[in-house]
Image (cartoon, helix red, strand yellow):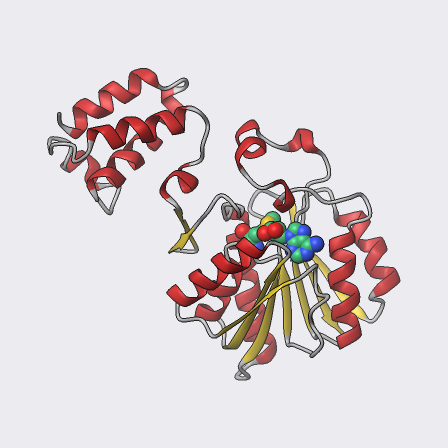
Length: 274
Ligand SMILES: C[S@@+](CC[C@H](N)C(=O)[O-])C[C@H]1O[C@@H](n2cnc3c(N)ncnc32)[C@H](O)[C@@H]1O
């Protein structure tokens, strides 16, 4: 059977072929080891390498499992990260946070090599990309989930990041000052904001935050206590006013900026020590 024949077979099984067709190409490229999706059309008459695997993968996909969990990897900021079911699949919005952080670090610290702490690290994607693109001495990765920390360490090793790794609630473990704290904590307040597939497959500990935003409070309090010069958060679109109140109370000597993403939603909160 050729790739094109398998593609046609798959197409008939998709619930929403117009929207999901791209995933069928991704699956077939992965099965045949085709690196660039643009080559799919050129190589569509090749025989499929493993039809049985194609059927299994397609079935998992039809059951709603994200491709990143099926193949154990995803692309973030142009690099391929190892992904397991224990971590959130890195999102496109987070690339914007990383891009902001890289520019901010290079501008603020000029030629100094900084120490960065990536709290709530999940797969380690934020810390790894900052290490690659900003002048970074080392990255401290931490998460409350032991399996996330193990995975972050595998990804850090893959990209040659000088890293330290801690299993911890927020910044509880940190006892020395660092130059930058960055975090994409769980930030969803309302479970009705979440797609069915995300709810079913992604770890809930990575998604939901309480009304008090305890995890944000934990990180800000400790970072302020240690005198961290730059703190950067990814935030939920609806957290701005709650965070402003918290920051006013516990970080009055920090200058705060809220930055919108490409979609026009507040996505980044940056705090700089005055
Ligand atoms: C939204 S995910 C972000 C993962 C990764 N940084 C990314 O951007 O793809 C949030 C992460 O925070 C971790 N987490 C949840 N509660 C935490 C806590 N109290 N302390 C530390 N980490 C926590 C979860 O295990 C999860 O890995």
